[in-house]
Amino acid sequence: MDNIHLETEIKITDKAANEVKNIMVENNVPDNYGLRVGVKGGGCSGLTYTLGFDAANKDGDTIIEQKGIKLFVDGKSLFYLSGTELDFTDGLNGKGFVFNNPNASKTCGCGESFSV
Image (cartoon, rainbow, N blue to C red; front, side):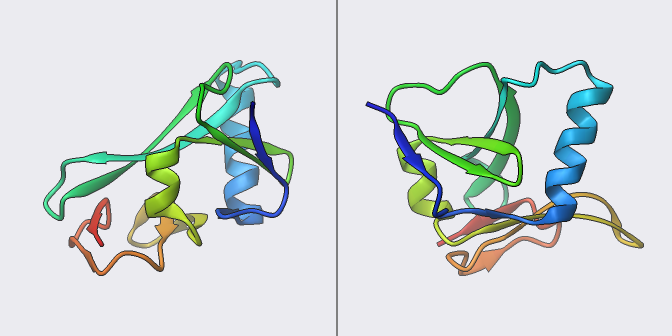
């Protein structure tokens, strides 16, 4: 059975949601696809964030629907990402998605890996 949560463990900002929608349009990603958000081992701090489009959820995924975006999150990743806000920045330090993760006790200089 799917775990569908409208009250989210992961929040997505308006700016990030708009950027996801723009990327989907620019790359002809079908509307029914979702954004897979996760973590994997690696990086200089132990874990790295992952983002990508997926056609459907997998067994054990939590599905979070927010601001017109469907997020697919596996159970292990949800443990590390609970409470995280996904944002998008296009400031002087570069352009890209930013994970504001309250669970991260240490992050690397590039902001792409963390540890808990």
